[in-house]
Image (tube, rainbow, N blue to C red; front, side, top):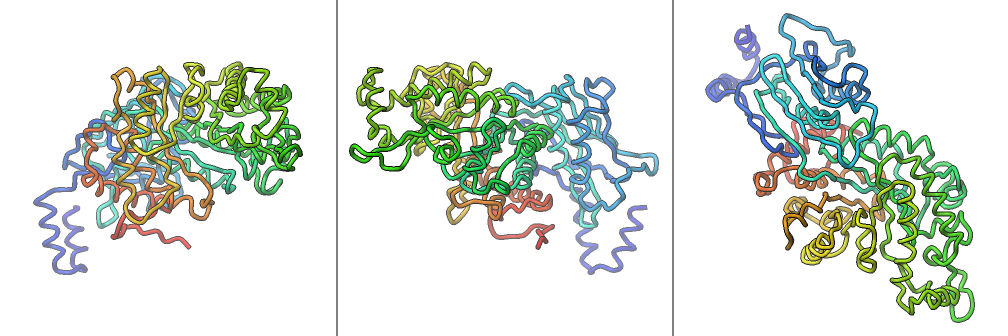
Length: 538
């Protein structure tokens, strides 16, 4: 039947159609290896099976701990159907035609359907594709989500628009547990819809942590219930450029359905100019000589009221954001204002700090970490905190952002030798742009390439791509972020030895970029060429 329809259709094509068809019949259908990031083990054959959107359905395995009604998987099935069949224009009611439907059976070992992903969540899955059926087995729903993404990338179309999937066996799990994207929503406000689309694209690359650098010097868009003046006076606009409690819940809910943690950052004592607009007496008054200059510096670390305010604010934040971790910042503190203030200098003398302002900052951060620890939150801090205060709690996570490879490798060695968990961000500041294929640099980063024991290297829990917002807003975020961030995604997910060649990765990466474009993500090109389905937006 298929051969007859080919011949009939071929009468209307160029004569070389038959030559191409002969080549196809001799060589068989393609082996699909365009999965990004690359699975740990991946076996695919030329044997392929046709898929029809009207004869395809998802099914819970009979032994699955999660069954119909699981919010995470039910939602994923709805999202992935149009990703599997992007040209399907049916009314959305799936009907089975003929006697050969294809179904994807999903089985999970634990019913964590209504929970949130956390730092120890398993994302391991096994995927097997055979005639009429694919089987996806995972320990958790979060692993099932990663397997669904992989399956969606295995489905392809021939030149006639028919859908196929090849016989495949995959066993997969992430190399690192923490694979993050940082967005800065203070320097430029990002609309909620832009954040939600970023979460979608993160899931396509198997990122699992959204680091929300929500406030900073320029603006305070987070609308606090306890301290509403922080946003009403500190945001760019008190109505249009804020994140309401409803907005925050929407982001967290959307992220959960993709298996993504939301990690909030409230950076202090520096980077807090916007805080002072809505909270008097929080920032340090600066002096010029013996007189007040009228300007303000970092958070004032000598007042009891400062810690009362922080305790109340972080209590609210801990209730709003369910993740077990919170980022406390602690970077780039300018000491000039503190040193100009006579009250601060008197406090330093009283505490025995002398003129070492790193001791004052350590005093402040120790108090803030104690506040969040009392709220059962584990602190993440930028590396500056460890540089001047090596006695911070052992469960604190250190975040490396400074330096060239030699510098951050030395930091990795020093921090892990002290028994601290570490995140690496320094090589993935992709707000920096250059002419050419800079994704190759991000791909070639090896997070464990530093002097240290195997026990030390186990303390590197992952890495993060940072997109700071000085020159980025909703107009250019997506093409600047994607697909460049996805280079780091494969480095953080896949086996190091199997992904050692950037040249071998290039064709897969090009194919993945085209998948992003077809899914509505305006990912910039890697190099010259074209996608079969070019972006046609206005």
